[in-house]
Image 1 (cartoon, rainbow, N blue to C red):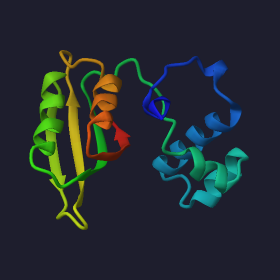
Image 2 (image 1 turned 90 degrees about the horizontal axis):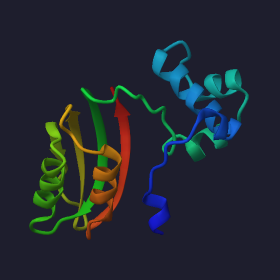
Image 3 (image 1 turned 30 degrees about the vertical axis):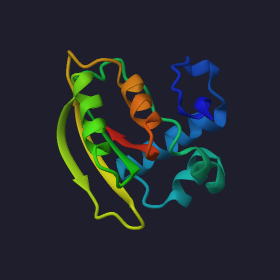
Length: 147
């Protein structure tokens, strides 16, 4: 289970072609040159099921990620102190929180959306996200975007 939470940096040539095509389809959707997932997947030559299977697990790595914003969502138990622990973890890595939105808990589970500014002094963002994801009471963490 712990392996699902790890992040790796690999060279382009080591990434399976289907994953590269998923990245290209996401780029097409973000560029608004195509309107639907069907169009994007047809252009890059993969099935929609492959796109949906991998879309949340691969994104391009940018060496110049410092000075960028990472937006992510997580689902967490509604227990006292958990939000504070998440925010402290970000602070420990010198991340600057830009926005924070927590939903009203339903069945004792709340969704939290955070935008974090990655500063020159910010530590390893992958390690920060992995640390948050490992906290007791965190159900999942998903990166929504990097700018």
